[in-house]
Image 1 (cartoon, rainbow, N blue to C red):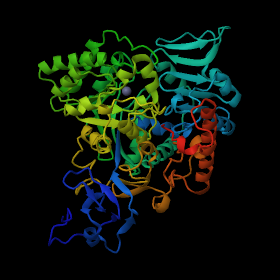
Image 2: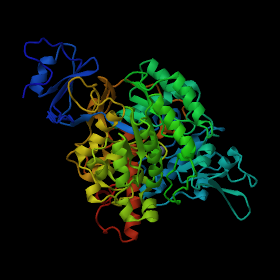
Image 3: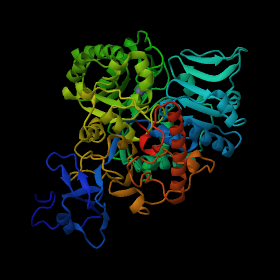
Image 4: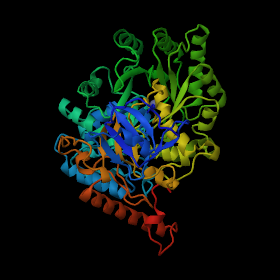
Length: 632
Ligand SMILES: [Zn+2]
């Protein structure tokens, strides 16, 4: 096959960067596999075999030998609270990937000791008790013992928050503090708050408590965002669609990411949405934004993509699967006004909707507007989440030109979902196959950083295996995706939601030069090992933004993390554990730090083995490690 992009007789300029000796998965049905990619000016100029691409290697071309590794298009997380995540990243102790509560508490204890007075230790999502060998949350007594003086706030999904005594004092909770609507401050026999806050079912109590903790200054917010984007690059992520979020006001909380874009320092392409913050004032906010900005404004690094995932607060059905489905009041009239306003002004939107009951009510509003010719009018729109959407609603979504963005929230909440709705419902949640069979555009994401981990490979593992982090297989076989399909949701899927499918999500001539060289071959590793994949080399717009293992040193160093007490400075972000069967796992860590981490993981693994042995789940005499892949 002739090499794409080189026309006979046309003199081609040399490439800036060539990746060769790779197993390239292109996402291009016309040329699904290749061994080399040539990049110039941030764009892919040729895809083909090494011998063909050799003609594009000039004296100044950087040639990367992929050593036979798998190369995929850069991943795109279609639902990530990346802007808010970046503003907070270096202040958070991340339990993402931690495999035992013992290790989690050891990290917390150490962090409490290194946190200066006035600051808090915050564990804000990205984990679930289901991932721990112990299968339980920390107790309040354990938090108070680990941190007698430093405020500690631990968020568990959208379900609860645990505060130690110092945090109760810092947040100002007393016996006289009333329970807010939709939230419960749990009290002891003496009437004093115990430290347990419950979303019942709304998460506002949890978030508003977290909002009492100090924030970073402007310089550290820039630095924190830089480090978070690089942490995402570590997993091969090159694009994300931001879903906005509570306590993420526009324009104030977008200044940091805009400043990085202005300086050309983004290492992740971000399409963002705008989310009205205050109940009762949603229409005023939307009107003001419509007058000042337009979807599509920006460039390929930072661009406005529409409104949502919240449009009006009364229509939001928070997912908290430990609680009954929220009973929403009559929200339609304000909601209709908001959607009408968007449609009349050429604004697309994304809409958070967890349950079929909500989606039906939303669709009735959309259909009413469609009867007036207002829908879809070429505006891109989509539902987010849709765990329990039914077939008839999917037909109605298709008829209105909508799309769906799905996340692996059940990786972390699967056990709670099964307890409430049963295994049969979980087997179809969300109904991926029914969505794809209808030809709907489906994009994959994580919903990180508070409800899920930002590690996209945990989500890809869920899409392929149907397994939660507890190891329980949730999805029915017909509702699991093959690896190429799952990857398509995490590459082209997101590109379609931003109208960039012609320049993003495939490794073809003319596409943005966004790709990842993987630590293990996604297409051939054991299913359980998918969750352990990382990138050894990530390229965005032709720039190397992450390089470890044999490529260490190719990416520019970031400034050291500030403040120096940052949990990320000590522990890093996602806690990789060695993947069974994967030599050289945890490629993101070099030298002593990696050795350190492997020892910690081994200790956690030993403890888990002893626990399993004591309960008859393991066979004495067989070594712990091969039986302890973290998702089995
Ligand atoms: Zn949502």
